[in-house]
Length: 68
Image 1 (cartoon, rainbow, N blue to C red):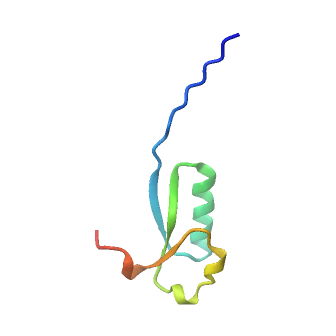
Image 2: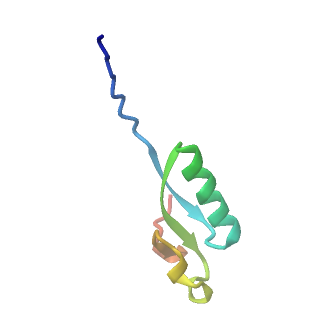
């Protein structure tokens, strides 16, 4: 018996999700489930009012994101 396994390395696009509220966290879970992209963190205008302990990934203030 011969078993051939091909390892195809996928290059996943890295993204930041704008909005670290419930909708942003749901979007992160959807991306994780689909496996299409790599969520590297969140961007939010008001990080002072967030419970940052519930995030595994970093949450950045909008002011830290350079202009595109």
